[in-house]
Length: 333
Ligand code: ASP
Image 1: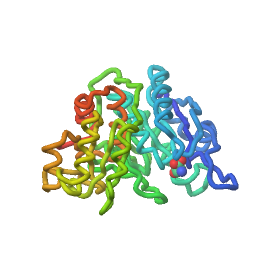
Image 2: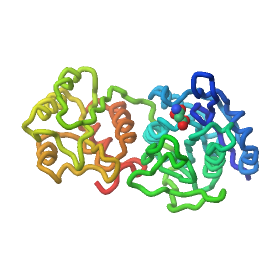
Image 3: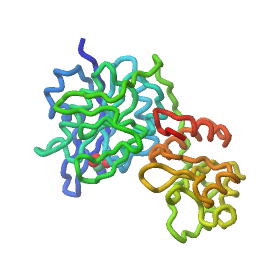
Image 4: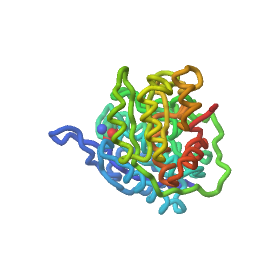
């Protein structure tokens, strides 16, 4: 029997047309489907237009709206395809991975570097491939399907603004590839659960600070009241200027003693942090209860911290939730 897949359209370049003031999402879900008529041989499709936004304008509120819509329709469909702008697709994919855990049904995000209306677009292939993946018996969980790659929602990052291979799977292999309209699986991904675990709360009071050499940490001092979580994107394997005795460390102490959660991660794109390697990191890790992100992506760190802070205000529980692996978001740490 043919699978029944629900398409949720949210906008992005895939649905964009020239407005005279730059590309704007304007095609609806039915117009997208009309560009790939052969997909009806693969599966039955229903479609919903959830929003029509450039993904620059997508916020955590939209992630919750998408998750609510998936929950509402979960039992009625075999899988889900979400069309989305590529710019913040990796954030949405990571957020949905935390809001909908262990989904036995596939939830696929896709888009295009060019509008689906153009002749030389990548969007038609991406959309068709997404339905191919979503309609397969062994598919489950949240993934991005793009340029023939199937990437875990917790591992994806946009790395190119123009090329068709826009996304990479960071520190984790693609779970499958699609070549000539054939799905080639590298992993068996069947989840143990019959139903996903749904969450509906995020706390967005999260601040990200990327260090640059010589950065003055002083402005951070006045910001403790505005945020519940701080992400410090440090250099290399990780550490703070001045180690545990500088002004950075004093301000860090202030944040932690006022009950805030502090995550330390590296700004190096691959292979993650290891605060134990250098004195600048080890002393911080030993003397301050910071949370180490290890090899998580920035998108996963931001959304997981929002999710964890959304479940509890207790920093110890935030740490436990954050450090518990979800959908292979942190491995070997
Ligand atoms: N600015 C667009 C968006 O993220 C880019 C794209 O979809 O490729 O909505």
